[in-house]
Amino acid sequence: ETGVTQTPRHLVMGMTNKKSLKCEQHLGHNAMYWYKQSAKKPLELMFVYNFKEQTENNSVPSRFSPECPNSSHLFLHLHTLQPEDSALYLCASSQGGLAGEYNEQFFGPGTRLTVL
Amino acid sequence: EDQVTQSPEALRLQEGESSSLNCSYTVSGLRGLFWYRQDPGKGPEFLFTLYSAGEEKEKERLKATLTKKESFLHITAPKPEDSATYLCAVQRSNAGNMLTFGGGTRLMVKP
Image 1 (cartoon, chains in turn red, blue):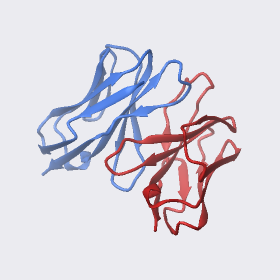
Image 2 (cartoon, one colour):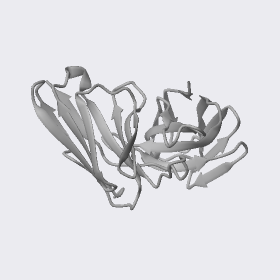
Image 3 (tube, rainbow over the protein chains, first blue to last red):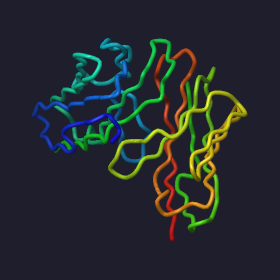
């Protein structure tokens, strides 16, 4: 048990659908992250939230919309995705000070997304 | 731009055959270097953080070392359960809490 949970674990959606990924951390951390992991490519950072505020958006297309209502929950809202968006989407959290200290990140199990 | 290169991409070992995985990095001002283990279909599991050249950390059969240009993950007498993908990531000093990951090394240990 990593302390970071993600739902759903698997998701199949059409290009016109709207869906949301959910992440919850039970570690008392202040920073949360979304990553994309595609086959044969390194982990790509998508978004960073520190103390509920978005501090990084790594040039992610607007069809991905993050939401962080509190320090324990993070959502990724998906709409009009493309087949190339199919990947493993990972959520992580860290104790994370705003200066970047305490940055051991702990990952959830991921959501395997398939876009048809 | 920060760069992290891991080698080899894949490594097959016999049980008990010790070896090392390499992580070469280019970053202007290293705050920390991180090692993770990832099993198929799961999220990465944190292993080690190294902060300065010369630092070493150990956990069971794993030992991580750091120089100014690279890090090694030494695996001593591996067992089949050590089979996984090992990921390396760096954090730059002035980059907040962003990590840059390498492509990983897929380790397969055969009995």
